Image (cartoon, rainbow, N blue to C red):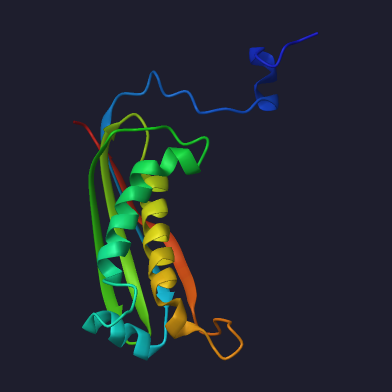
Length: 158
């Protein structure tokens, strides 16, 4: 009988990918996404009139926190040293685009961290403006988080 740790049964077991032999490289990933909102909600965000506070500041902090906590939320994601996080927002008439840039010097990439950051940023936007987005039945007919994706990924010798 073969054990689960037998190299011939690799497909039967799960776990984190082995990265010990990979060299540390400079890593960078950029992720973006949009949240669709009512024009009046976006105007309120821009004017600082949202009841829960400064929406974009809270969303920025949430993104940074999510980047740092990614391995706790994605079990097979390696904990890696994050060397930088940048968060930017673009307010458009019917949506807000969030972009998160994550850098590291590591043996594995930072795509999951960038995706986690942009997702957390927009979830926090939604939470802070949900009272403005609800219809008379308590639903969100226009509100949607969309286009979550990695827009750039790089690795370079350190």
